[in-house]
Image: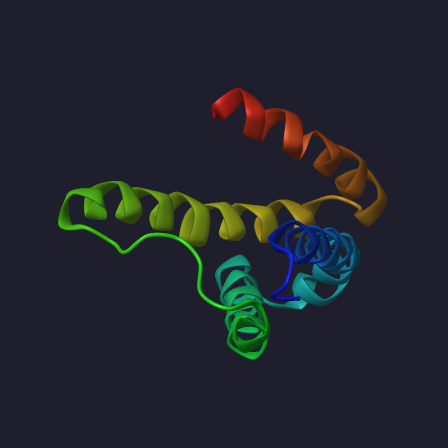
Length: 115
């Protein structure tokens, strides 16, 4: 995968989309008996584990973190890694898996609008 950044990026994007599509119904069913914060924490623990496993295959990318970028990084971490997964797990526990999957199709649209 190290030879072509485009090929590795496409493979990682496909793997991410598949895993997101598979986990949505699982979260709705398995997270019903657990609180949304616990469900979100377990999701991120799984993502961290997979990131540790995949990182040697992909290699390092990006720039070094500067002190000026720290406030923005903390805001992104709060909304993207704490608040959003908790609200996702909370919403999935209250809605059906099918309707939730259909609504999540708008995630890309909302991401583009927010960007």
